[in-house]
Image (tube, rainbow, N blue to C red; front, top):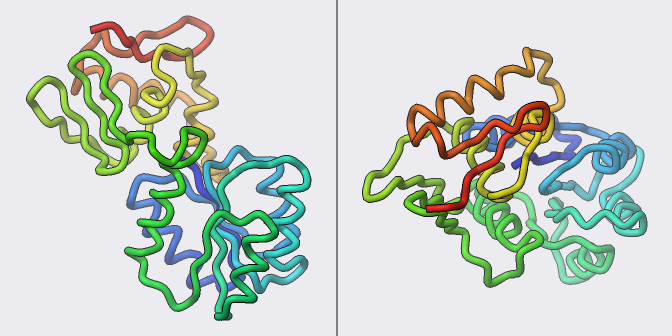
Amino acid sequence: MRLLIVEDEKRLALSLARGLTAEGYAVDVVHDGREGLHQASEGTYDLVILDIMLPGLNGYRVCAALRAAGHEVPILMLTAKDGEYDEAEGLDTGADDYLTKPFSYVVLVARIKALLRRRGVGAGASPVHVHGDLKVDTAARRVFLGEDEIALTAKEFSVLEQLVLRAGEVVSKSEILEHVWDFAYEGDPNIVEVYVSTLRRKLRAGLIRTVRGAGYRLETSP
């Protein structure tokens, strides 16, 4: 999943980015409200972590502008303030959740996972995806093939996750790059092929099909 952090406290933003990258997310960071609005509007993000006190535009205005433009990306607002009025204002502008600084990193990750589980699939949807003998738990980030648990790196899991969430559909190489690697990645786009090849070795060769000229498809038949 690809996240955008809009936070002007650079040390905090970079610390969060490092931690979330280690969790397997692709993370982009900007430090200004106007740039955050531009990035969130132009990029394809699964979630935005948005500070309220920002230069350029504050978080309330960024959130309101995104919602007014029809963007439905989940937004988790951060603020050093506290109080019902601030929370109400944040939620009234369209934010999905609210966290007051200082906060526990563990709580932040839990909130992010909860919002991503709800995203587009309803609050009661299961995070466990079963396709034949393949079982992928996107919340616990565990993969099973039959009775065996398969150990994957964070990036390997993220690539598989993109295919699992759209099982049976063709997912292009550019879509995988966009969601698994951040916008600063300037390496060889064939890196996707490398990870797909590794997944085939660890799982099963026929599980991920190459659709020539289009991308990859996770087979859903048993």
